[in-house]
Length: 230
Ligand SMILES: C[S@@+](CC[C@H](N)C(=O)[O-])C[C@H]1O[C@@H](n2cnc3c(N)ncnc32)[C@H](O)[C@@H]1O
Image (tube, rainbow, N blue to C red; front, side, top):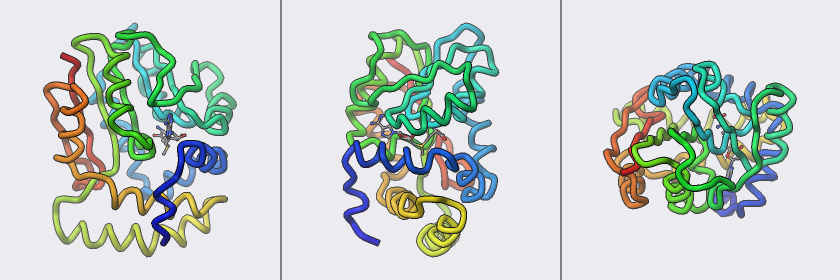
């Protein structure tokens, strides 16, 4: 496990996702032991998109995370900077308006979205604060943010088992099912280095989001953070 794998430059992160794009969704389902479907449902409930609302799904990858918002009748814009992920998304979901864009310099005007959301992407963005400020900029006053991201189990025994899973079981499983096992070493390491629930809430507040709160899913393996643009 090299520390260097965490120091990826943005173009290296994009290239890493280009490489895993074809098998990304399958690998997700396997490695999350089916939990990812439950997490996506929880995100959809938290965003509570209404028909006609404009929703930005940032770091949308192949667009899988965007589908519940389209199903709710919202106009969802999936945005990502990996052309490989976007290409795979376009092949699978030709009707989604997949958009190329960097989270730290979003290609959208101020205040155009009713809700912004990001699933399993914020951790991959090199400058988290810049992304949180950009998300605030493109949201209308009174609009909301929902972040779904890996976090830290709050119950010590689960934390121990989960850390073992990340460091010992995940790499061999990833080698078996993924074309790019290195990407999953990065996954495990970046999850461990990511701030805990209170730490991410503080970052949201620092970026200007109000009414920040969170809810744990699967014992805190994942957390849903929410906030409102003042
Ligand atoms: C783990 S995938 C998540 C995809 C999708 N949201 C999901 O839930 O399946 C993370 C995505 O973040 C994207 N990403 C990382 N840094 C980014 C940035 N600076 N701007 C835009 N997208 C970025 C990657 O290209 C990748 O597709």
